[in-house]
Length: 120
Image (tube, rainbow, N blue to C red; front, side):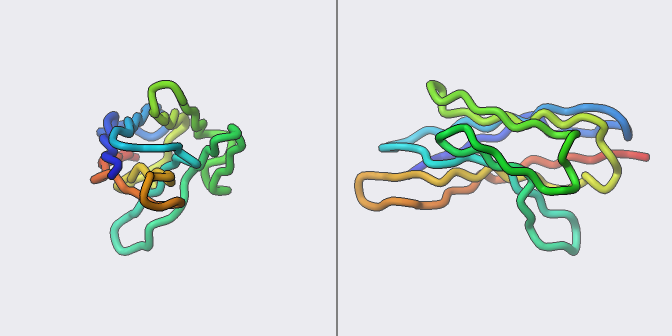
């Protein structure tokens, strides 16, 4: 199993910045990708940003140019730097990890989520 622990959420005014971090631990053979999803009240969970083992990334159109995802492979951590935050970025942000274990490949794991609130 893989455990994901998120940190860095909070309350910020529009235009401000926050940095989310997620650390993965457990019996992992290799991590294929790590990323962040978010879910706003009454909406479906959506991909925010993803970074793969080869360092390729993809972002939701709504955050391109404002958010940056980075990864420390040695520490199995992923960070999301969020700048120029908008009220519509308010959501619970979930860390996601796709990993290979000894028993199976391509398994998805989720953190418990961290709340980001952006006030007008």
